[in-house]
Image (cartoon, rainbow, N blue to C red; front, side, top):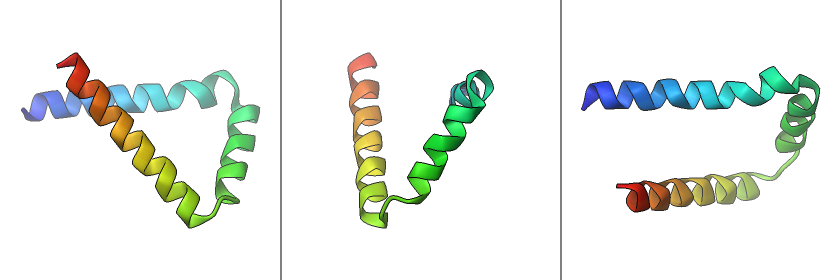
Length: 61
């Protein structure tokens, strides 16, 4: 199980690094916009992301 967790973590890092590598200027602007969002909106976005990820894992498994 730990090996699968480590693989998932590595894949997450690869995917997270694609946008700043391909278009650093646009990625920087997106981060600046995220900083300006309220805590409530960020929490809702995080919740939506977790629910979507969970649903996709359920469908793929």
